[in-house]
Length: 539
Image (cartoon, rainbow, N blue to C red):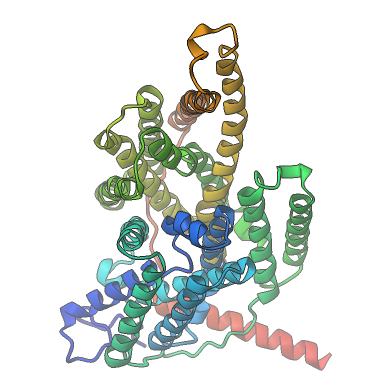
């Protein structure tokens, strides 16, 4: 039986009619992916505009944005099962309908629970539609199914769209209103659906695999745990951390979800995330690296906007223009990783050391040069290095999970763990830690700086008290940021030294199995589930 989407001869996509030129077929699916990735429940770049025109808080919008990432990550464990159950046409049309509904809801609702649930569902369908497109053109990108090559494409597309989406959102809000971004994306999604109905045929794989044996209860519990974790990190400072009954209650709920998940994984044949995936050495290593690395560069969420807006006086358009610097770093980082890691097979250790070195340059630049008179162009270098470092780490350790030796039925579970730690925990835990550190450090420095302002200081007698307070807070903010950048720089250098002295000869050799092999694997799982169910009913 011929492999699905892999006919003999030149690459072709049987889902697309032959009147479409063969060379244009892959670009059609890339166009679909770009529209899907641009579409989100909420657009975090417009958070300040949403706060100003709705009853929502900054934390509410962040929680909704991270809920989308949780929905995206939780989908990994079952995305291949859904792919083999429905055709690409069905997946894209359903995802388009859901994303259109999500944009309508998020543009008009002020209900936080509805916003969070909508964004969670949006993340799920964005991931499924993205897989439907990317898996279709995988053999076009890498005929040998080399995942190091494939992930370079994935990250240059996804991470670039994140930066470009922020730019588009701010300029849309600047020239009109932030709600118009939702209407623009609705129009693009309608265009995508029209193209899908005209140019994509309902081609289903040669082997129908029903959705049997999926641990949906486990999926809900894992999503609940991650929601609780994210809630604590996002709302912790607002509710005063553990002094708040809300934070303690959510922490207890998250702990209960985790305990139930681990208990169920001990006896279920096919839990949503198995112990085999949790205990895998590459998964554990990736988790540790993600948490350390993204905590080191978490200053992007805590400091950069505050520094550029409050200290340098940038308006929203100048602030979002900084995304172009990060975008350039992402493009160069993906290109560098493709040439060195994917093609020349540089070691995992080498690539990790390079990423941490770039993070050190980013932290050192801000530590030595942070000041009141920094020009916008001077921020190009650190933001460029941050974008390149983050994308290198992401590509390298996602590839390591493919190369971890896990059987294919467990491999998607490892991807879910990778999504939890890299996309969710990495984006929430670091900012929570750095934000709390900044709060205490700033209070200490403000106290020290304010001690010089007394009635006996003749230089301050003619200055209004409110202006004096503002000057002290501004100076304390700059000093505190410099101090925290220094501590993070020390930790980054120490981490790099550990990486350099460690023994790591492994080189990338991660190849995706053929689609017919994947189908046989899932078909065998479904058959075993059917046999177990029939046996239980007989007993």
